[in-house]
Image (cartoon, rainbow, N blue to C red; front, side):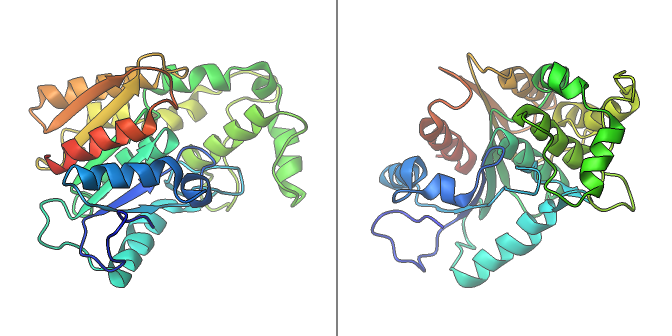
Length: 293
């Protein structure tokens, strides 16, 4: 939990829930006295925008979380919206009179989770700030899941690892492990806790049906299909780095275009640099816009 330097711990401040990127945790973000996020809080306060930021632990058995409810990873959406937010509000004074008492924000996987929580919880989040969110999976994800180390994993080999009870990590490849985690988030098998659909069959052929489950929870696809994806008054801030290694700026821009055409309160900013660059500057800009400063 971060508050501006000099503020009382129980000061009535608007709440921002921040979701870190894949595998990120509160320890990573607030290490060494708060690091870049603490500087962000102080910079916002200096500009007249004092906020309380709660950082969520996004780690899971598979390394990270997309902050969805999943039988393979856990009920992360409920954890954020129904456990963390009320617990923070019960312990600390929240500015009930604030125009935007609760904002969901995040970067990368956290940006994805922020978008999906704002879509599914209109009444709980008045605004969303999504920095380089995972979206347009044909761009951000398809290249990752097509790598040889991922294609080489068969369902039988995967099941052997999962059934062993050992940590679900196949030999020597972190990328394959991450794709396992993404499958666990996007394509859990109903009624089988911890199990998920793999993207390749025993012969290494891509399973389009399994991929479609990923696309069904791609924010770009969701927003295109649903005119009510966001509530009319929800403010949506999207950004992406100009040289984003994963192409996250592409999907963010496309979502902005859809919402702009619907006359939604939305904006998009393409920041200089790469996927993880200038996060403090980008978050300050996003939260300022979300609050209306």
